[in-house]
Image (tube, rainbow, N blue to C red; front, side, top):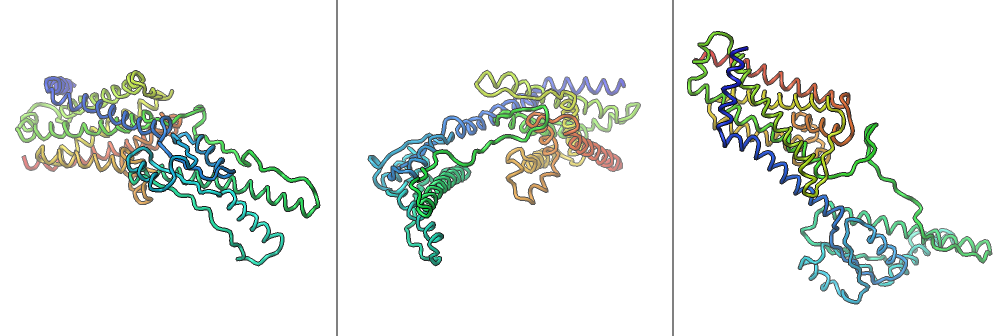
Length: 425
């Protein structure tokens, strides 16, 4: 116990006087989390609050054009500018404004679009009731022009197209209902003519699948980025830890420490315990940042849930996994340069696969399978369960088990490599 405590004090003093190391371990992670969250928050805000500039040129001014105009006015991600053909008369005028950055996308509804739609539906109904042969329909198509800035996000364009098709389908259904009603009224010799329905036939109630006990959730960058980049930062503890282990070995301290009475394991445990506490402190600082500092600059406050025991165990296993991986890298390689290159690149790969940079659910199926092998993904899944879905201890047990196995595996391999390298000293 004395050897462990002495090593702990020694490593602590070394860490305190190393200003560069303190910056890397504490200041850089906080800056990373802060900057990435702020950037992502602006992306969320631009899609949900401030809106994206969209031009709607409505040359129709009838049922279809009015329905599309009203629909896009309610579309929250659009900052809509409506023109009825007075200012933007040609496609060249519209393209010029888009190139200049005034609009991101423009929709042009042609003149008499509603009449063409009614003609198409009328011909379809007549074909059915009058038993005309298929293929006799000759009404022209409604050509809606979509002019897009080439820098526009693909996901935004998909949202625009989806909304456009949904609104057109809705008005087409209403017109079909009206024309069929008129046709039936004629057949029944009735003077009543059904009006064009004003409301949609379907209402969509969108919600999130949350666990029992959590009622609502509003997507925001804080909830997603704080746990993700906290995990990334904690795993970068591999670099100073591995470098310290290799330094002791290359400078001869390893051999001198082995001459002391007792087990070298107690000395190593003291070193690892310091970095374990550093990892816990890193996570605590980042949680405080998300909980109390982010709201001061207008960002949402981090919701960490109410399951403190589960959160504590998950954070402990995350820290142990990062420390054990640093031990493995430090034992495996012989120079600080080798450990720094391998450790840094391996963490970047594991974070990319683990969903830190890109959400796992948008990866190809093969990459999603590979992603399940990343310890950073296990930790991130656990924190998402606690912070977003309202999960408890039972919801993250599998993640805890995986991180525990990773910790034990890295430690066992490191011990085996340590025994093999003893023969060379």
